[in-house]
Length: 276
Image (cartoon, rainbow, N blue to C red; front, top):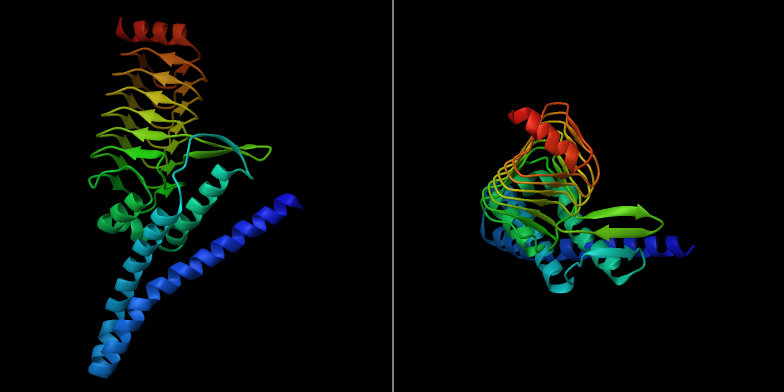
């Protein structure tokens, strides 16, 4: 009963916020419409409809981001119960993001300027040169995300800063992506990931919780990188490789296609075999 009550409040808050954003967005459009109707012909009014919708759409997105910036505190890393203050902050954060993400996701990620302004208002640390495909699955938009210059996220790539651990516990971790990083289509980046500069992550590759990747490293398609794995700089991880939890991959390591690494010794042996 206690949990259902909180869920009801969260839903009520979502609806209230959505009505507020829509109402504020319609006010300037209503004023413009009254001006056009009063001074111009019927034909002009008809041709003005697409322009008015375009203005409304951009106003809606920017008003949503602005209200979020003015009313919602920054999110902090950690593990929190679903009735804690930090969890409520995350829920409100998601409410504002979902107003745009659920209804206008394709437009948001297609229009680079509006996307940049909105995500910056949502406190995402990114550059204007950051590329995001129209169908990217950006699960969160908050201050825990940092994406460097000239980096790209491919179609259906998934990035999240939260993870439900069960028993009403949610964890929040930073995701940091360096400069000139390419995350290919359908790759998955879990909370806690730290990706250095000039890294390539292949198609459908999965990075589990708290993965660290050094600079100039390439990871092939369909690789699975376990939790708490540390991969050094200038490494080559072949397609379909599996790196088990807590493994440490030294700098310059080459893991062959379909390779399996369980600890530091295994990684070192495979590196020596590949370079001998």
